[in-house]
Image (cartoon, rainbow, N blue to C red; front, top):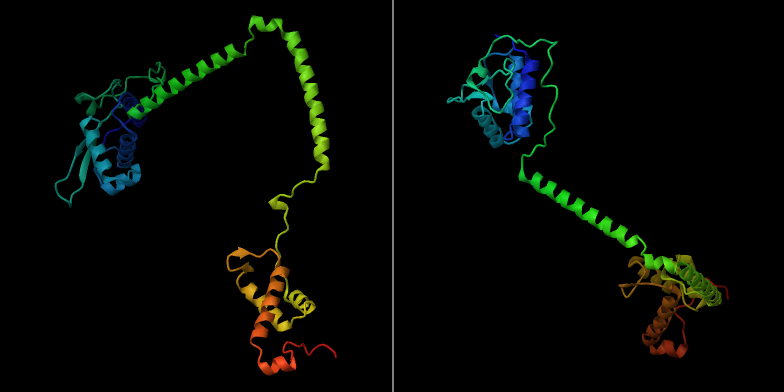
Length: 301
């Protein structure tokens, strides 16, 4: 096993990734997963890989993305991928070393993959890789389109601001009539105020219309209240209970559709219809004797 300066290795690898426009976040994530396994095996020349382990470490959920990124990293000379032809044997990956070469340009050469020469740079020498160039990551054409839209919107806002400043600046001819216009505005405002006072005094005497929200909300009555009302209108408690339980069961709806607004008016209609029904179904003998079947025997004589 060889000694690998993994700090210089990762620094040079990340610089290569930054300069390589082909690299996506999936490539970087997969390479970091490979580096983790490589570090766990104490930097062997070749490491055995398993697809489920690498997908878990790199957080890649698609097998197509995993295989595509692995092959592209091998094609771009970041690693050397040797797939296994047997399902009982694992595939192998040879990790190229980047800790012994000062070259940080795009792509790699053959001598950097197996370079094991000691590091000649000392700690006192100036670090050329400490200054990082800020470069946007343009992995997709959508970033370019959005950047152009942002520039166009900024130009439009700048033009509109210039137009507003020009329009807001007073013309020399307008400054001449400032005093006269100020007097006219004062007169107009005073007249308007007097008119508003007159209108407010007129409207204060007129009764205000009640809005629909201020109307009284219908409250269903209690059975005792309904019985008292029916007794006052010369009807029986039995008819009152029939009326109450009928509308209590349908949610106090008139005709099964409209909400009831005045239950006393509905009760009067109920009483008149009940009297007509009783008169039609009364036998001739009862009509001659004028017998009242709806008599309340709980009342004293």
